[in-house]
Each structure stands twice: as structure tokens, then as C-alpha cells.
Length: 164
Image (cartoon, rainbow, N blue to C red; front, side):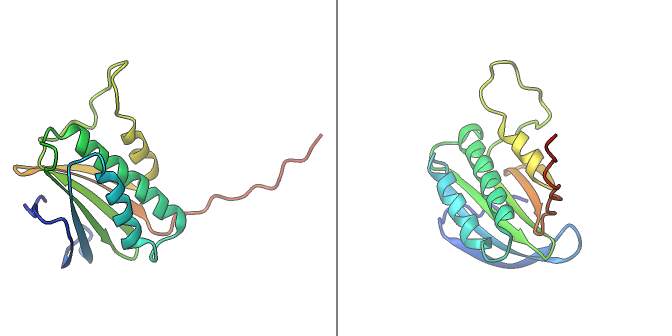
């Protein structure tokens, strides 16, 4: 899935490509430098791209998870400061999908963390808040993606408990 789109730090609105479900998904991409500030720009990019198309909670979850994935790419991909990280947003009538791509060698998402090891908690958030997520490796690098349903089910509100 990595397409070697590195170099420009501008948005690109690509036509479309085939989705895994057979439909067409519009794609919007922003390439960011691998710097600590990249997560700030990634959050802004998600907000600008989908704020008018999803419910507030879906937007906040997508922003949080994107920030986690970009931070992981900056901290753990093993590339040089300033190397490109690509944030790709796909959306159809059911889901928003965000993929963060970098030229790092990847990781094992099922590897148990050692006690006292720093980091690793972001994937607990990804697992908890996304509908689906995954890791795709190619010769060019690694892409980590998540999907969130555009219309999140609202929890049932129970009546207040009666006081004894």
C-alpha cells in the first residue's frame, strides 16, 4: 500500500481507488515530516477533512487515534528526523479509514510489552475505539490503519436509579 508519495507537504486529493468492500473511496493525503509536531498537523488535517461529515464523537475518536499512530511513527519507525510520514483518509457512507504510512520496518502488534517498557498504550486506544484496525507491510515501509463507523451507536440511557 505504500506508494512512495514522499516529498511534498501539501494535501493531495486523489481520484478514487477500489475499497476492500468493492466500492469506491475518495482519498485525501497529507505528507508530514517525521518531527514531534507532526501529530499536531495530523490532528488538524483530520479535523479539516471530515469535521462536516461525521458526528462529533466520531471526529474526536478519529483525531485521537490519528495522533497516536503519527506519534508512534515519529517515535518508533526508526527513520531520520524529517523523513516523510503519510496520513491518508478514506471515507464512504459507512466508515472513515485513516492510514499512517512510514518507511520504517514495522512491528509486531501482538508482541507482549515488558514490564516497565515505555509506550504501547496507544494500541489499547486503537483497539478500543476503532471498528477495525490493522498493519500492512511492504518493501517500502509500514502502514497502520483504523476504521471507525461514521454513525457510532449511541448508548442507551438508563433511567436514574431510584434512591432507597
